[in-house]
Image (cartoon, rainbow over all chains, first blue to last red; front, top):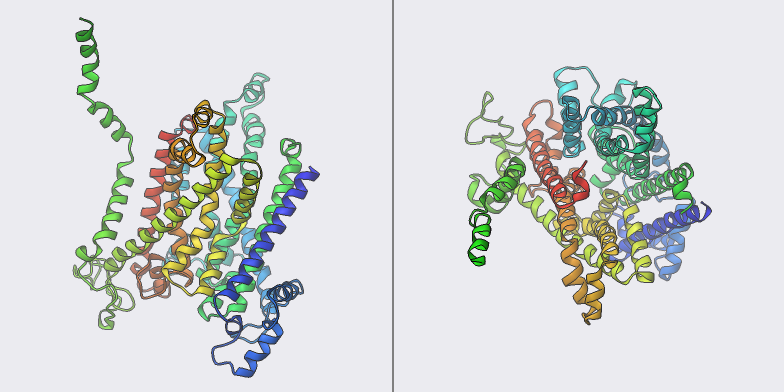
Length: 305
Length: 298
């Protein structure tokens, strides 16, 4: 177990390290990074200033050290557009993004697990066809178009739900469903096939012979073992939710990190985009690390490897 | 005597291969295959099958609805966008953009990843652990985020989108192919090839590669849709194909402000993306079932 944790933590740190180096080098090899950090109309003095504070006159290694030091202290530079420190923008937006992703994650679990189980139990019936069709569709519909379709139906046509911004619970419904759709599809497909496999196994036969109710056999014994395959990919699902969250936030004008980044792209506000990418990537890498360790803790087979 | 019996026994099977071909065709996903065919043809023949200029802005023709709605006409079957450009024409040229990016990213990323996977699996040991660690680190990157940053620094262009996708794509191929190769390395024919003095390169290319081909083909097919969605997402965010080049994701972004008045501007590219991705995913599933016996039972 300890060895596994050390290995996974090492991998996560290496990934972050590699990401920071790639970003660092990419910015420096493709032109003058000072130009990226300043608005196009900046004067020569401002350029000189930023060159000095970024240490562009120093060797690369020192520059990298400065880059890491700034990020470790939570100073990501100033936004070119609003002139405010990026760290303040992020502080305002990050909780909103986490609320959206969290809500979507709950919805995903509430829908995909029953869907996956039912489609396996009622294999070959209309329930299976419906659930599987839904899943196949979920993996082909781009999330931003789904969001637009929902707005067209529920806001423009029916006038039931607000189309943008944050507010009461009704503001969460469309963004959270749109965000979760793809992951629901992915988990349903995976759970269906591992449930089918589980229900074919010896321990389920034994559970039936013991005279357990069918309900207990399916929802306790078979599901518990089938969930292992889903939990294995838990980190990937979280990563998917966080990246798709960017697109959903743009569609629903959700005041989170994704929208912040989108505005950064539109206004070529490099410090903002760089900070959002690095922070989101760090969250993705960290959460898949947590999931993997929790999973190893739960499943002795991984722990003892 | 024996000869005539033999031919008689063999003849029926040889003379009539059609039942077999027809049977396999029957199970083929014909609708997805035809969608793919239309998609590829549209991409190749875009100049011949469209009647409008994909770039010509004509503000007097802006936001004309599709032909079946009031004010629509057959001259713009799917209507026009906010700049008066024909939606169907731009969808057709958009197919070309999607297919170029998918083909280039999969050829370069898939090819490179396969080579890495073959090398890692064949040599094993240190080479293997270094290459696989690299692949794992790459897989830990959220692709869209990475691509956005890259495009931001290098500037939006088709080339840079391909570079960004390729830089992340190879890792999955490396992982999967390496896993397959590890299994193959235990087999006799590899040992025999080694004994017979075949070079490492020859064993990888002539003995290992053909055996991982089925897996590779399934993976490639299943990832076409994924690459198309990633490219559309990037273009939607403004970090992909720069306007005015017609790309499906970009068209969706341009129509976003008009959802309440001009639904067709976003619906047409949305349906195009969905149909093509759906078609490739279904074909990939079908291929996997046919080529991978392990999957067949489920």
